Amino acid sequence: MLEMTTGQKIPQMSGTLGEIQQSIQQIQFSLTQVVNNQNSLHQRLIALETKLLEVQTNATQHLTNLTNQFKSLRLTHTKEQKQIEYNPSQLEENQENY
Image (cartoon, rainbow, N blue to C red; front, side, top):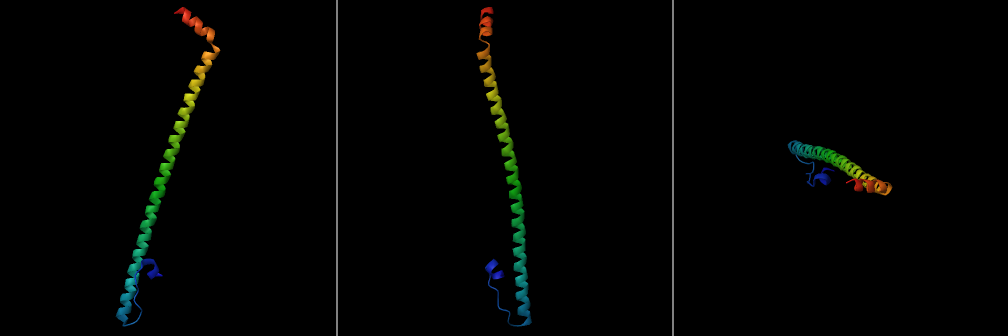
């Protein structure tokens, strides 16, 4: 399993007790590195997810603001058009008074 994960060859468990102990220590060290790398990757993933959520929230707020601005522009335009359509006589009176 460790060999598949790290790509490192693990020596056979034969030889003196000292050699076996050294092999076990090498395996423990390699497993510690794997765990540390996993923890680091996990923290980076959390940071990326947090940043993505912030970007999504920011984009949603901008889209909402733009939508509201667009609605305001349309309403203003609609108001002006209605004023011109429904008050033609009032416009003529105002122009005559000037």
